[in-house]
Amino acid sequence: MSDIRERLQILLDYWIKHNQEHEQEFREWADRAASLSGGVGQQLQEAAARMADATDWLEKARQDLRENMGRS
Image (cartoon, rainbow, N blue to C red; front, side):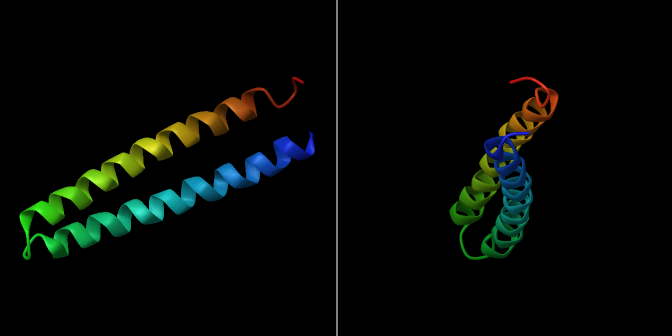
């Protein structure tokens, strides 16, 4: 496997886990912020949803990388 593929595999694993942690944290803070302002809570929920979307794309990229590992 090339250095780029190895590094990308490591980065994708890290980015996915990191995004999932942020998504959870956004949702927790959205619940807390709801008592202060409905708008802030809603915006944080939207940020969490968009983070989940980004994670989905990263997971697709990781899967594609794994499926094409033997090809160069």
